Each structure stands twice: as C-alpha cells, then as structure tokens.
Amino acid sequence: MLYRREKKNQSILVDLSPLIDVVFLLLIFFMVSTRFRDDAGLDLNLPQSESRQASKEESLTIVVGSDGTIRLDGEAVVLENLEAVLKDKLKDREQKMVVMRIDQSVAHGTVVDVMDVAKKAGASGLSYATSARAKP
Image 1 (tube, rainbow, N blue to C red):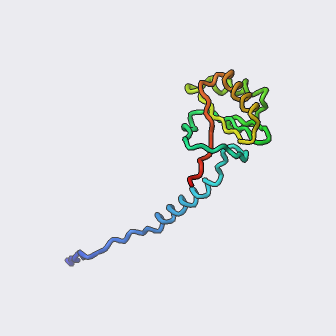
Image 2 (image 1 turned 60 degrees about the vertical axis):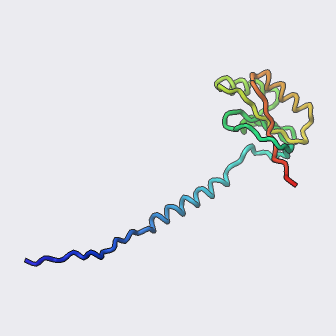
Image 3 (image 1 turned 90 degrees about the vertical axis):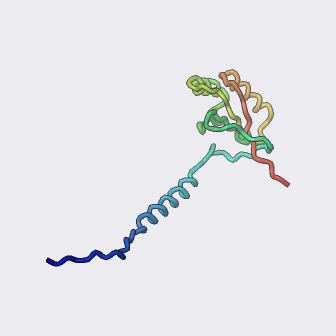
C-alpha cells in the first residue's frame, strides 16, 4: 500500500475579491445615500450664534422661509391651520419641544405669531435653530 506524505508547506489562499467588492458597494451606497438628505426644502439664511442646538430627533421643527411659507416637519402649513396641526402632532409626544428654523429676513411679527401659535398648541419649550458663527 502506498502512503502519500502530507506536505507541511501547503499555504491556504483566501480569495478577498468578494470582500473587497462588498466593501466598495457599501462605500458607494453610503456616498450616494447622503446626497438625498433634504432638511426642510427651503433655502434659509439662519441667524448666526455661538451656542449649539438640542437634538433634532426629539422635537418638532417649524421652518419659516424668507417668503413667509411655513412648514411643520416638512409639510406645508398655513398660519391659520398651524395650531390644529401642531396640537395633533404634539399630543402623542412625551417631550413637547418645538425647534423654530426661521430665516433672518422674516418680519419679527411673523416670528411672534408662530411662537404664539406654538405655545397655544401646547409646546412646552421653544428653541431657535441658528447657523454656526464663522471664527475669525
């Protein structure tokens, strides 16, 4: 009977090309998916501030554009209906925080009207979103 000797120098080759393909596909997916992010759909010129904003996930966002259009979490709303829509969205939330993203060219009276409606709807707190001030 013939016995073959096992070679001790056998090297095991692992083919990494499928792994590299998957990594590149994931990289492309994440690069492309980040381009679809659209915060509010309005171009805002926010006032500048040095302080930072609280987390956005826990609060509702009211956006007022320079032309006076109002959006509540991305949905267009008129000022007359804002209180009813805001009450409906706040009733199921534990934290009733409202973040206001208002263009700096909006009249002060409109800002006060939106704040008043938010307080009437039951918002426990109001916060203003600003852009970061450029450092000299």
